[in-house]
Amino acid sequence: MAYIDDPETQRANLRFIKASMKQPLLTREREMELARLWRETGDEAALHEMVSAYTRLVVSMASKFRNYGLPVGDLVQEGSVGLMQAAARFEPERDIRFSTYASWWIRSAMQDYVLRNWSIVRTGTTAAQKSLFFNLRRLRARIADASATQLTPQQRAAIAAELKVNPRDVESMESRLAAGDQSLNAPVGEEEDGGNWLDFLRDDRASPEEVVSGLRDSETRSRWLAEAIGELSAREQTIIRRRRLVEEGATLEELGRELGVSKERVRQLEHRALGKLRKSLESCAERPGDLLVEA
Image (cartoon, rainbow, N blue to C red):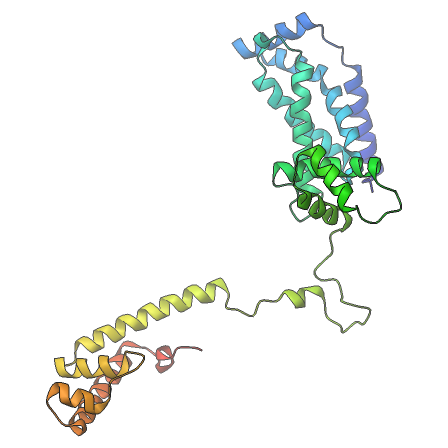
């Protein structure tokens, strides 16, 4: 559905179109002369005359994109940017008409604008998608029945061959063009308390801020623990590392044989070491809760 401007905007657009159509056409010789003046001396008056003469190209091109549901005035503005880019890059020594060269830049600027604004979801991010976006409707109207809701596999293959794209890309773009944008705040079903679509997209995982904060807190706790362990005796460090800092800790009996003491003595050393660690860690944290790790 085409976008409909308000009356004032329509009048402004009409004035611009009329002014564009009144600009005199340039002869090939005058066009080349203006292009050289601008390119070689930076003559802004020459640039203005050349660009003004071909604003009608922008208006003509905008009319071809008016059915994408976007304001004609915006299309004209984007096309005018393309026209200025063409003027900046035009090389008169290549012996081609400026209108021919500028048409590509104008069309490209308008196509990029349409792709950016046709939907809130970016469409046409690859060359294949861009080609399909601007040609699929035309080709479908030519080869498919107007009453058909979907293309057949054979029709998709024919379109893919003509545009030199993958049939899967044709199917994907067909679905994309058939579905309009929908607000995530739109209700699901007819009941008022049925929730909205956004409820189904909720992510219960930690937010990026929480993840970063958690990593920093974990690094801090690890540093505190390393410093606290460093304050223990060599025998106490061995017991804590072998009993508490591995997935399958050693038994009291195993450590007793290794250290040459009874397992009861190992238990006593472990209890004393844990007390030292607790005291050291509590002195580092402002609040006891800072030592806890949330599950």
